[in-house]
Length: 476
Image 1 (cartoon, one colour):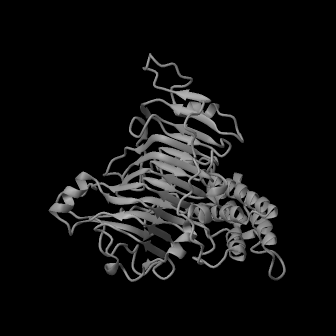
Image 2 (tube, rainbow, N blue to C red):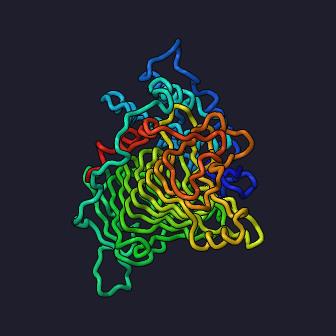
Image 3 (cartoon, rainbow, N blue to C red):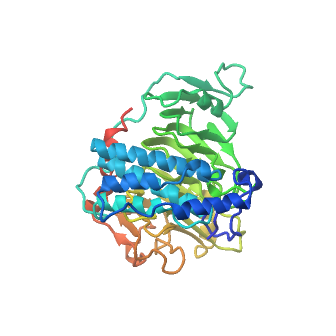
């Protein structure tokens, strides 16, 4: 498994990741690295005394955290966000919002994990404390739920909304816009706004990498249609020392992000390694009628609560991955050919879930989606059906959860359905489930023995209402 900023995964074997010269700037010498190790060793491992209450554990986790400024970029970003999420979890717990506290602490744990792996260090002392906090509050995994409708009918976008900023290409003389790049419009948005800040992006190809930082909350991107409005870049792992995390064409951290009628693309090509089109750490985010184009690692649903409605997701290997609580409603998911050539086989995988702790309130839920191959992939499949294969998922991390409910599965989906990561890894701790699958790829009698045919009551746990509390925040 390649190590690329703690996030890399796939079939391509790479040398252990080394921080580039650019990223080594904050750690100027070996002495600084030794100081970093010393700080970790000296940190308290646990709160004093015997068993502690959840609030005590949470306070201890925050206190045990290293100072973000002590770490190299992007590790500093991970730890800074982890601290913010822990602080917000404490506030949510005090106000009685238990689901929010669990989602926030789940994300904080992920950031701590990513930072320690990035620098090839043991887990931070705060990691075990955060894990214990989650365990103290989380109900048993996959507890039976009610039987709600799978989706929330709340409208996430108004039929007509006034733009706070407009973007169009500079060469479109007939149109007058505020900005010529998407990033410029985002930079101009106010920080920590409680209301939505709507940016309308005209049809055109925007060749730029877009970053929406933590302080830019409630940003709404509205394009003029999939493919018509396209944001594209081509960064991939191994270029200029980049890891998977840094390859994203569009990366969102600010909470409340929404996007509609737009395409996010990583154009690195089928021959590249991991190349992310969209990465999200935005809580309570909604993406509707959005297209995600890429190959390996197209959509990085990294942390927090995310809803994808009627989206189109295109890729090859692990092209939906991360450790968020993500629901995909009525999405079209298509695999495309890889770069092996006509004589070689292709094992493509839709989802690589990264749940790292049994207490995390995370997982991937696909409701009423279509999973199939592109025209090009189907042509190759018809010529050599045993070689061109698509799997529903494989466990990137030990406690992976992925569920498909009422989905149409095309004939390119393998009868066994799911693929192991390596050997027996995670096969006893994951949960892979299907409910009411249909189509030629819905051969439940041939599925691997470590997957499940879920009950309607169980998949109700992963409704918009129960899993991400969408009834509280989706309505515009």
